[in-house]
Length: 166
Image 1: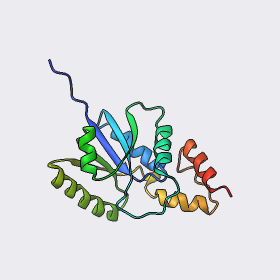
Image 2: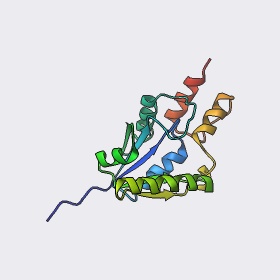
Image 3: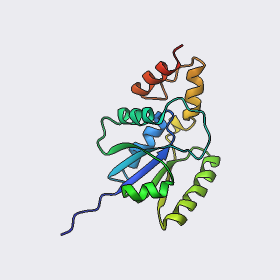
Image 4: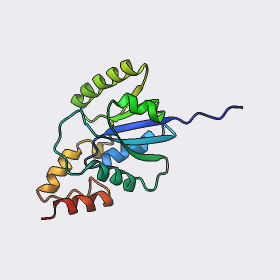
């Protein structure tokens, strides 16, 4: 009898910072895969002014999922399809909040599938509680002195507060 194959999913993004919405998508991805790799992109496809460096984002992901051994944090450069192949991922998981998100993600999914020879993408709708939360909004609200504690885990909140201290 052969060993069962481990199903690996990759959840790519900038995660600057990782939010409760991201965490929800990743945890729900564990219903679809045995292992989920949360992968921070070195060269994101969308230009954003970041708050945290790549290494700190990876560390925040590790802290946020310290209770879940099936979730790994990593970083990658280059094409997502090449990275997915290297780690043995058969599926990409993406959260989509809006129609605009869906249109952009659908184009990326179709391109990835075409150039990879079959890498599939699964779209997950967010929990309504998190449907409006983005890393950009969290950064902006925090930098203007607002309370972002409902939107990020404790370890992430501590890092945000440290980053905006004068």
